[in-house]
Structure formats: structure tokens, C-alpha cells
Image 1 (cartoon, one colour):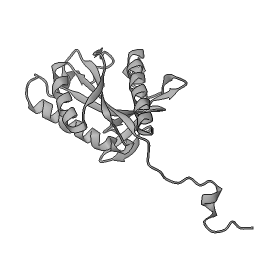
Image 2 (cartoon, rainbow, N blue to C red):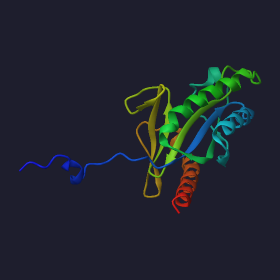
Image 3 (cartoon, rainbow, N blue to C red):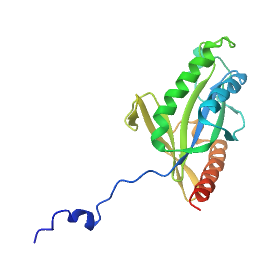
Image 4 (tube, rainbow, N blue to C red):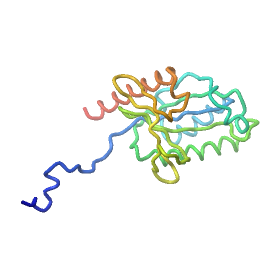
Length: 193
């Protein structure tokens, strides 16, 4: 006997719904920590107040950026108070690229690229980074931007994946992102009562 027309919805077919909000952060990389202040000011103007800042982490994992950014490189993270829809990540990566250009145009540092800005978000089960580069494990988002699940959160711990960057494998990063995740969960609970 054939199922009645439209019965698929009654048999468990999923229906699209809005994604839960996520916690935006931006990773900043520079050989000139003073460039963080300039970038952070532009970011806050566009994205709102910052509610979590990491320590400064030595970035000794690659020499990829050395010629255009100088050395020694330092990594710093800022997380934003306002939650975002995950679909906003592509727009925010484009914004971050524009801010990189603005900081460079200021001419305060003796390198072509004084700061590298890498936005991403923390969700309850994962950490996602934005990239302008396609690869087998990245999904196209919009506006020339790809998304990558970089870390998974399972049983109270961050888990790495084969493509996880070496610095994102470190306990210090995991500790910071656990704090960001805790803040996300508290904000979601407050939003939903």
C-alpha cells in the first residue's frame, strides 16, 4: 500500500529550522603586539564589545608568515559578547580581511602585514574557523569563504582532527576555548530563560 501524499513529513522527515547562536572569536597573529590594539578597536566598532581575551601565546609553529609579518610572532584571541548566527561567519571573515588592510595602511609597523585576523566560532560541539582557501575538508560558505571544523568538543574535552593546526592542538588554547564555550552556554541559557 502506497503512503499518502505528503506522508513523508509524518514519517520523520526533518524540517529546516534556524541554527542556534554561536560565540564569535577572532584569533590575531602579529610580531607587533601593539597592532592587536588597532585591530581590536576596528573589530569592536563593527562587532560589539569583547567579553574574553586570551593571554599572549608564542607562535613558533610555522615560518609561513615570517617574510610578510616579521618575527617573533605572537597569537592572541578575543571573543565577542554578542552571539551570532553561524551563517554570519563568511561576512565576518571578509570584514576581518578589510580590517587587516586598514591596519596595514596605517603604516605604523615596518612590515607588509602587521596583523593576521582569523575569525571563527565556538558552538557546544565544535570550533569552526573561516578560511579563504579551499581544501578537501572545508565547506564553501559564501563570498569566497570556506568553513572548517577545527576542533570537536566531546565528554568535556577538545578533540583534534587530522587537519587541526598545531597551535590549536595545545592545552593553553583548549583552556581558553573551554572558557568561551562556558560563556556561550550561559548566554544561551539566559536567552532561553
